[in-house]
Image 1: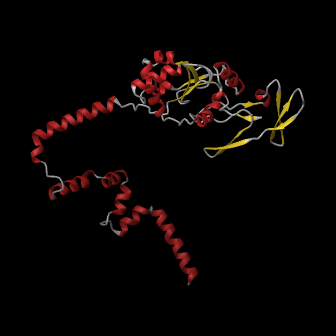
Image 2: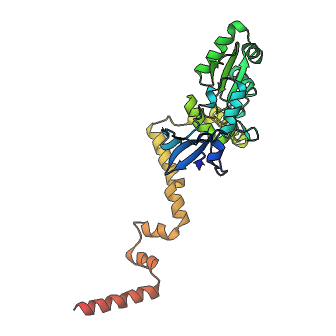
Length: 305
């Protein structure tokens, strides 16, 4: 069984799925795993071939490329071939599509967001689209003379990658960063993006401010301005002796120590240096507890002597 790779672009609570080797086999070739070694069996001749497995070290985990590399679909020469490779990888049309572009509305500039959003709509499978240069000019709202400049700008920012489609004149292959869109098995998204050279783009979420807090702050500042106009000239200068003395007086009346003493009267009396020894004992023990303590102390004294 080939364990589906955990999607690292975002946390998912849904369980991962196992893909059987039969899903990666072809009518002319069957995959067989013996002692954790993958073999390819030619159906017609019965010849057994040893498939050279490779390992990728990715974020501290080992991912084995057993049969079909995720880059196989990316090297497809046509849209139809790309669909066939995508089907073999499990990126079927009935899989839920991931449209993360909407979460980057406050990250990308408005022109970039408009262009990337339009390209996301052109993706057929996975994150790849086959588009003619003429259609790209229409989609990106630019002219043929400026098309290369627009694509290069998006490519420098790691939003897309562009290459020529082999044997198709005027057709370009455009990969969109999987952070924005993925049409296929979500388990393939992270590794495919890594092999394509795309970084994981951070999503900035707007911070919701409290309207109540803003209202209270504005009211407090307005009240302070009114007080400062009337009485500000009487206030002590910061860091002056009078300023420190005023702070000390306030702390003595309303400070943390005063609050704690008010909450615990017993502790306040115990810590008061003016408390006599008799009053201290009375605060710690009840009369019955004190008598029991004296009797126990007398017994210990007799044992010692």
